Image (tube, rainbow, N blue to C red; front, side):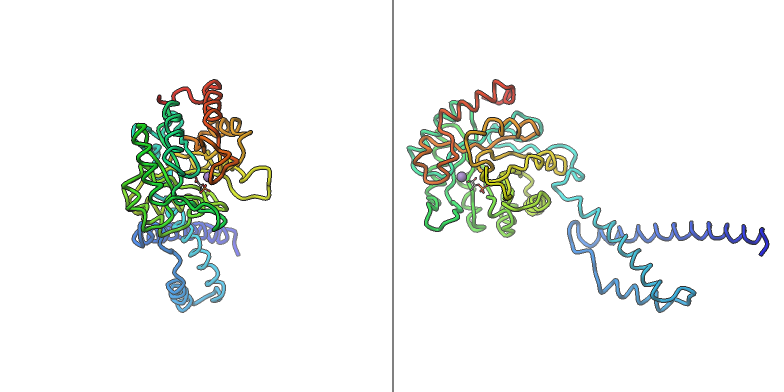
Amino acid sequence: MSKERFEELRRQLDAVNLEILEVLNRRAELVQEIGQMKSGKGTERFDPIREKEMLDLVVDANEGPFPSDTIRHLFKQIFQASLGLQEEEKKSLLISRKNQATDTVVQVGKLLIGGGNAPALIGGPCSVETVNQMNAVASHLSGEGIHLLRGGAYKPRTSPYDFQGLGVEGLRILSETAKRHGMTCVSEIVRPDDVAMACEYLDVIQIGARNMQNFELLKEAGSVKKPILLKRGLSATIEELLYAAEYIAARGNNQIILCERGIRTYEKATRNTLDISAVPILKQESHLPVVVDVSHSTGRKDIMFPIAKAALAVGADGLIIETHNEPAVALSDAKQQLDLHQFSTLLNQLRESGYLKDTVK
Ligand code: PEP
Ligand code: MN
């Protein structure tokens, strides 16, 4: 073969490569358009029947010199890369930063959570027990400038013999106490059917760790016009938490506060292991505010100050601090709840170290 012919063949090959490139990208554009039509988000993109039809079509049309197996292999690679393109789109969830660059700010009464506002402090007992107990706590917390009062009425307890909460009576006590002290309130709801009812009592509906993947509850929470405090599941990955939030957003409710409350690990020194890196990762991946529950994550009072500082240092938009007027006799989580004096001490320590400078009084 002459040198000229060799060079000519190489030039042709370069041209064919460019043609393949153009055709591949034209195919990719079609795939993207189909992907967008398949849903907005999340529809299962891989369609094995359609893939088989496409493969059969090209293999039937193949006249060589490539054998059918090679053609099949090459086209499978192309199909897989196309699916990857659609996966990229799928990642653009409603709650994703890719979808919204600015921070979502959740307003609860006059409290603004997220968007660089002063850290939102959520205080109150593990469980609503009595009117007197709630009054004692709310009176102290409101005096300290705390706006959002917590208290469980439906308690997801490990043992069925432990205090299960006062139910709707607990919601009523919480709500009336909060109003009496000019506060707003948050409590956990565990059944989808209770979400609408709970809206009458609560300013924020909490979905607890054990229910993070109760998808019917998430859907219901997405259908109401109340902020949702969504806690990370005991063994949930960050991605799973984000998908759980997406369930709520997909139903039209974008008032979501994410909560890192520690995850299950082999470590026994703390009740759960606070995944501190989840905070900046969640804030990077999503535009939603992120708060840290320093009580359930640690299960101990003696490290609350450094842990609270750490949470705020990595960018948490708020803290949940379980507080009881008489923790020693609390009906749940007695060990980890701060008493009123300890709450004030923690607050002062945080203020003095510059972490709460801008908190609204
Ligand atoms: C709570 O906040 O009352 C609670 C039960 O927490 P978690 O769901 O994080 O365990
Ligand atoms: Mn608790």
